[in-house]
Length: 113
Ligand code: AMP
Image 1 (cartoon, helix red, strand yellow):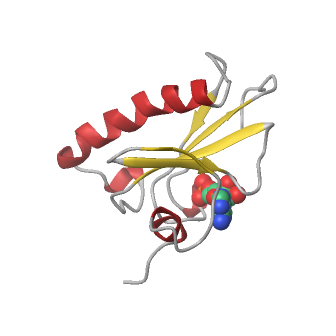
Image 2 (cartoon, rainbow, N blue to C red):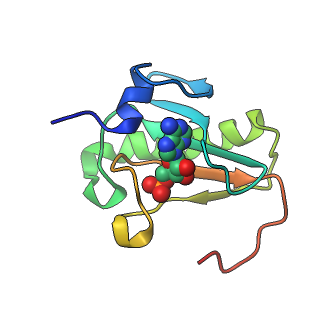
Image 3 (tube, rainbow, N blue to C red):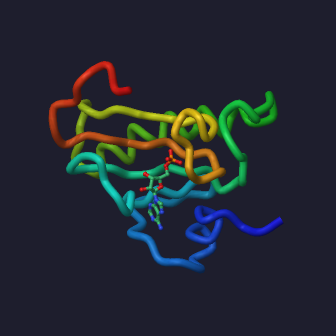
């Protein structure tokens, strides 16, 4: 199967502004930010979407949540940020590789949709 866009970013085959990396995940600036700060956090494991996760992914998913807080702090968002996970094309997912949007830098309205 061909690599997803995010696998290519993880492999440094296409450029991105990387802000954090560890053994399980990578965070980089969204190319089309919807807020002053908009960063994507992706697992290195090419899981298509959240609903495809299994019990085997539990530790990795927990790691992503904890790392999102770390990345938000690195990005200067402090405690004021929103995490978004689009699951499937009908929910707005355009890249088939699980990713958390970390969004902030301005007051965020609710509901988001
Ligand atoms: P989603 O619509 O939830 O699948 O989110 C995909 C996100 O990837 C969008 O917010 C895009 O702006 C972002 N994106 C697409 N291509 C790139 C890229 N080359 N580098 C960084 N972000 C990207």
